[in-house]
Image (tube, rainbow, N blue to C red; front, side):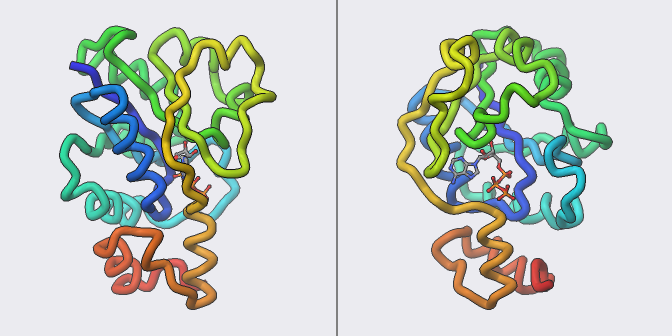
Length: 195
Ligand code: ATP
């Protein structure tokens, strides 16, 4: 069984997340994409993020009608700072997966900061890292030692980000085209991101 882990803050989940996950599943012929909401992303520890309960509810709504997408709560249950290497090792243990069956999806923006991650070399040794293109982020400057070990996805580029969505909601601008409708309904009902 070939599966892929896809970690993020998902605050909120958006069409860019879904698009790269779909492309990854299709291009690599994967059985499942596991969305893994971070309890606390290492590079976002000083940012205010929505409550875990809301982020998880929105992620559930975002993936509910997608075949092959599932949510894993490893990082939420572990709490503390969510380091990907810990999650990768835990998933491998739990599902008895070897390197050839475990993929790990990240966007190009995350890959440009890969040297700041905990144990980047070990991540590259433990699973197959897939990098999705993201507008405005070139991976040309990422050390060759990392680049040669990843696969770059040929996804259509989408400029959407969670930050942009939060700001648009605050300014009462439309986000209809950027997030799945049930997620938008949830945001409105719970008055998220309004100030
Ligand atoms: P924020 O704007 O709050 O930083 P984000 O839109 O980057 O959020 P995250 O939940 O932090 O969303 O992202 C999870 C993963 O998805 C990261 O690896 C990120 O690089 C990737 N990603 C998010 N949006 C896109 C996009 N539009 N294109 C490619 N990759 C993306």
